[in-house]
Length: 252
Image (cartoon, rainbow, N blue to C red; front, side, top):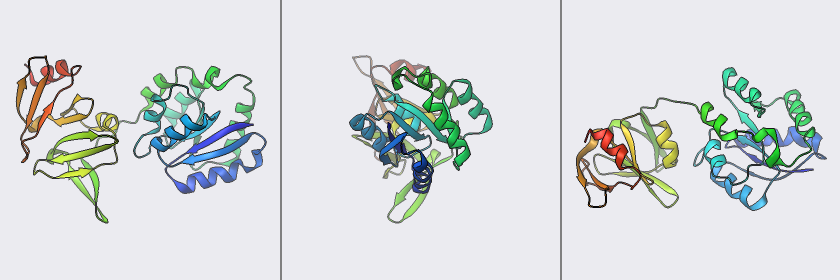
């Protein structure tokens, strides 16, 4: 029996998967479920499951980001809404998937595939070059605004109105040119992936809008201080490994 964790931000999808897995109680022991990648990461590290059913597009941490932070990856069955081209790539790399909405007949094939493996999850071909495959399959979405929650409302802030993003502990804040700050549901890594090229990551915790940079000051240790045009006149220090990226961007 495989110790199993379900990770999906759609409660109905989790409920459906639990119901469809009921006939296979002798194969899978569902020990927990999570509705975002960060909670899923904690569950995996604490419970050490043999198998996870994993959604890809989730808040806080995506499925991709979650997997990249694991030291040991369990067997993975993706529950995905990717298109047929991406699905073929999953198949070609021996990574199994379930296309939403999950159908009982397709799940049965997945179960049969898993049953054939007599090796440890870490030795399974499911995990061969896993992260390299995922990197190629990451969806590239062009976005023009970021949604944030204000009270009971969601407002959309145009990217051109954003000065910079900064991470503080587990939270990432969006800072606008008019001096306001909003909590976001994204990680810095997720933003770096989604944002257009005029946003540049200048440290592990900061991404700036290059069109909102007023001045760049060199420091003695090879780092820079980025002065922004926002109302607060924010000063952002670059990380030691990001100096070259900033120099190329600003044509220094």
